[in-house]
Image (cartoon, rainbow, N blue to C red; front, side, top):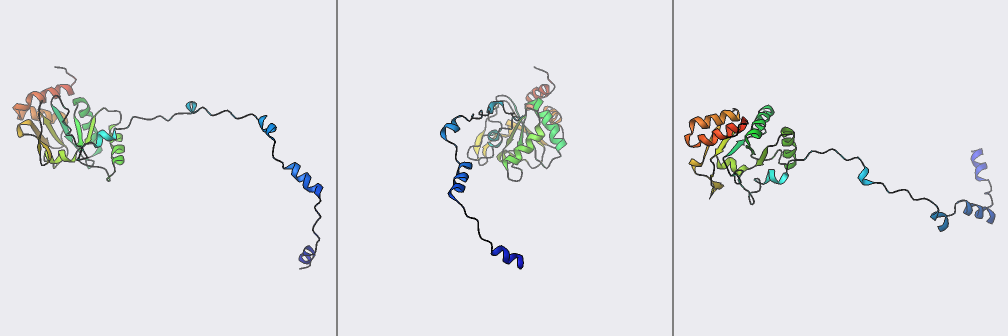
Length: 219
């Protein structure tokens, strides 16, 4: 308490005009002339900054065009020759999907998914991109195609004959039964094409053509 009492009893120092002037000079603002002599830092070159290495992502619009019922186009709509569709799902083993991707790339087939992963288009794209890697293969989300061809099991394979034309129906577009052939089962794409070639004489030529394409043989 003695120390505290002595501190409270001290007399504050006297501040003179000279003290105020010295403080003002020590902390004054620089003049315009002084500021003009300060060199400005060079602007950073944005084009010289390191650029991230990116891989071209899957086209979101192309992947999802079949998912929008108002703007849907069948996966086979633009096919000038025979069209081959491979219906897959993410419940299949990734090794199986990978093999089908390899085969679809060689045959020019389109992989068709029913819907999205966790309801997210971005999650679907990221997972499909990881599976596709450097392959060049078409992938489309088309839930109507699963109904159109009565797909209840994956993988399923649908071969549409050259020149097949769709007609409006309750599923959006339908094809006559003589316009396509289908099979389901855990088999390779070339096995499915060989099955079509043997069992569907009307589709044998188209199936054979796609088999030759897979083997890299031009006809």
